[in-house]
Length: 235
Image (cartoon, rainbow, N blue to C red; front, side, top):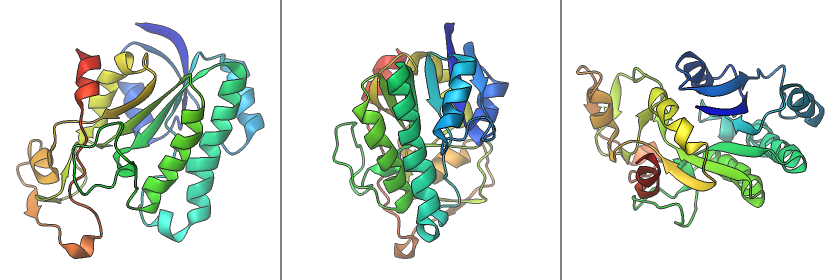
């Protein structure tokens, strides 16, 4: 068991709810947006002084719908960049480790098999906003960045692309990995087997409809990451 106290931001979010339900032996405290407003440094400091965590697991973020990052860049910047920077500033002052949930969208997505050292070139504003958060986290050495590709279970769509290659996994899969991952520092790609989104979805839903992504999708199709570092840690 990882006995150190862990403060989870975004305590009512999609992943946090799964983590709360299937806690794999972590000493967790889930802070709601009301209790820990990442845009208010006083709010952050108050909950940290109350809980006295050794680690902050930063899951609070603006993600879906993806269009919001194009239509409301201020909200995207505030929540994913400024809010993350606020947490890093306080964690660095108090010498608390921060674990940041990033995304595979920080990579260009045109060649695939991206390693943690590959050049970064986000293909949409969501990826840019998460990379912005990464920048502040990377400046603080007592930190861990997880570039994650995950989704809810069951797969939330009736159709899936057979030519978009990624590393999708379910929230439940990451929950199982966390006790080992949370001890690390640096940057780690986190996901499942490299495969088409259709192949991933079909394993839990035989009725999923196979479709092909075309140029109108405006999304690169080779989004897979190298998971060598992850596999080594999980062994």
